[in-house]
Image 1 (tube, rainbow, N blue to C red):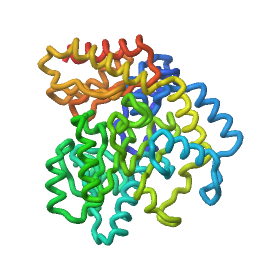
Image 2: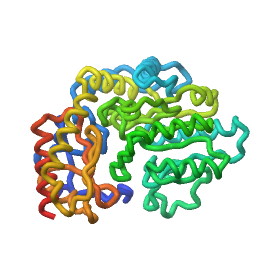
Image 3: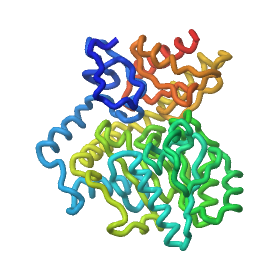
Image 4: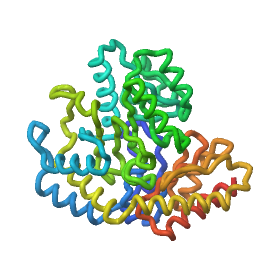
Length: 393
């Protein structure tokens, strides 16, 4: 229990746990009383380099004492360097820099709609999927597949149709019956929806359909990007290229930033005046993102995520596969989910008592998104505590 009293001045939009963290060190967070907690959530896939990362801290200090903001009325050197770096990593053509994943997804939605308008469609429509999560702005919550997220905010936006995630035949059926489709927008692995990993051919088949129909393939890699799944982007596990890809979260290691990358025809849609952001792409956020990417590459963190994720999933399966309450153990890299046969939200509080930070999403899926920099011993500790929690249910 926190020793400080919560204030009512903060708007009541989160069901917060009663703990206040004052300091971070790598994979650990330290509360007001000096208790140490192993972070298996990394700020929901944000702090991939761990907390208080020295290189990020040095970049923040240097840039804060140099230049924070000029506006996009002028060229921004670090923004141009970041765009060049992301283009080189991704194989895309150009980049719009925003402040969050939701904003990056808004950018992708706007490009898709404008692309359709430029083709002469009066009602350009995007296929999205069940259980998807793309953000909480009006467009992105409409694109999301959660009634819980959408409830109370009706009327939602027009211009979206929904298909089951991973169901190619449903996409083909929509294609036959709706001539206003301009894009398909999916997460390569669903995060908030319960760590759902589609069949290996899913993205490949989506790419084929989009090519045949002249649609855009939009990949939301807000959570899967930045080495989380064992490649810098999750689509790099395949041989396909998207037309638009978004990411955020782990790109800033705690500093707000989001990007929308475009390729080919999608990269040519926007003209001056079509889109913008006051803070997006400022020198501060971009310099931090460059520092994060440098460490991801220098420390080979994508390869580390692949290796350690495979090891942890193997350990979970070895220990939990015989339990009737465990429906599935799945994931890729350091993005893992353990689905139980009943709602298990109470496990987050029980884990907190054991000084471990986890998350339960989609009611019954324990979601693990630890820092990419965790040690073998820390990974083993996560496995042991999570398994003991499940075994005691």
